[in-house]
Image 1: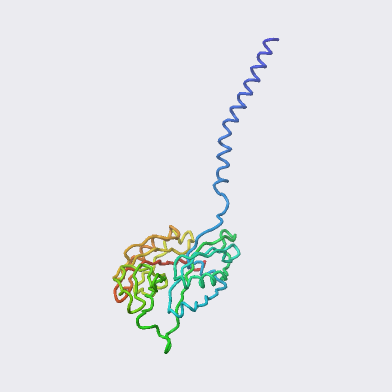
Image 2 (image 1 turned 90 degrees about the vertical axis):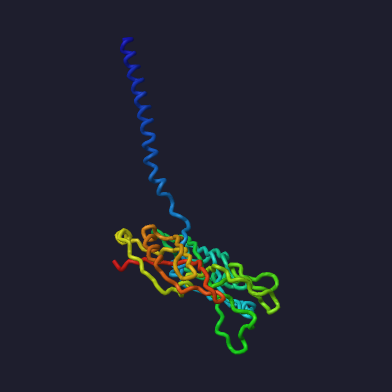
Length: 286
């Protein structure tokens, strides 16, 4: 009888040991099985898109009122804004990137009233961060309304800002005299920053990219945004990717490296141009 009890106790201890061992071995498996669910995670709450993509979503665009003081002073130029668009397509936040202080408030007030189509990601609306460029251009000068001969208009594509003493300062630091008695014009800067629209107007040779076969098979489309430096002679000096699908970017760079521009002249002298280039990849209908 005692021997039977010993056998029973031994059997129970072995059963408990096997159960504990099985629990330890199944633990890592259950954790690894949960990993794919954690990896998928929630969808992002905000994405960044290029100016070209956001422009295609505009359904209401309010033009800014030209500030009277800027008009009287013959101030023109571009105001670049960082914009956050809500899931409903409303402009929820606007902040200044660059632009003349007399032009920026009007640009911000106008863009706040813009309306966009909701941007869908995987079928769901999502917040969008983008850039908006607002142009301020005066109409052709009429008789009696020409700027004084001692105050040349801002350089094409330049964004200007006031400095003490009534002088005008370009974004790259060149100072222009505002009256004949003020200091003379300093040396021409070596580089200016221009919008993609302005630089495209100087294009004289454009090589279209070939559609990458891998991207074509995957039905990948989109815009590749490149940061470019154009030499004084109009050649592409440097290129770097700002945004775009990795399957499209290499072919965009290969094509744009062959582009040729007219030299950009500032005060009659060629200068380097810092700009952005947008390369669109669109597949034909299915």
